[in-house]
Length: 305
Image 1 (cartoon, rainbow, N blue to C red):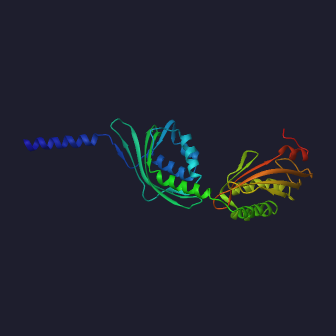
Image 2: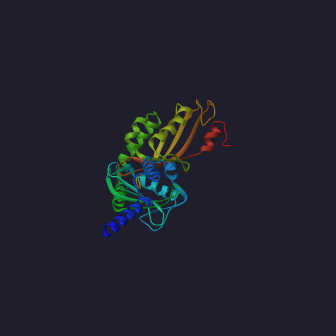
Image 3: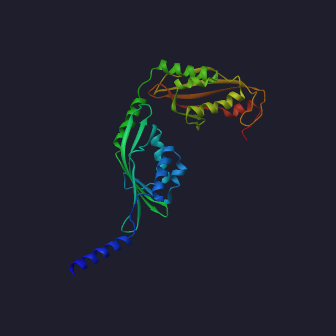
């Protein structure tokens, strides 16, 4: 009789376990969403990354303060501006989904984030743990835990390098190449030795380029419109704070389309001022260009309206 009772108890327990809802998953749509989000983050495809989150989602990174996906995206972009390459390990990832006692759905992700800094070429390796809560297929809460010290130390080294004094002779030699070879001879090949990968250009306070390729494409508009484009009479200030101010004159004949307008055949001459900043490696990383756009258009017989 005792053996029969034990057998019946075992059967009841077995049946109860069989009927219990599944709480642990190694595969699920939510897990695939997290994997896709990681890939979008690595590719800096921010629209795809953001699409995984609910409109009211909050993201907590080593903090009790939650940020929106847009705020987090801005923080990512600011941080990654100092990173040359980065991503999560393909071989060390661990991921699971659980449904807790309250019926809440969570995905846990463990991996190593690796990155290489710009300027210093320093490698960073940080273990990362993510816990993400899902409702109706969207992330409503994300909690991330990782050691920020390696990143902070690496960025401090970049700042130290960028603040190192630059030889004035070296800086002026780079400006000579930039003006004489790139601008006046339209030879973009020389930019590799002159312009930093994270180069930024502003024209009349409007950002027009965020890398050397965008600088080249932006200047091609002027080169095509004014095939005899030339910068003359550059007068320079002394080097101060790794910056040199250059006062210049631009001359050219408008024989090509310019800003959607047909060629006028007219000659132009305008003057401007450029602030050229060098990083710690002696390359131009920021340029602020100011010129009288109204005067240029008037000389072409056009207006800004």
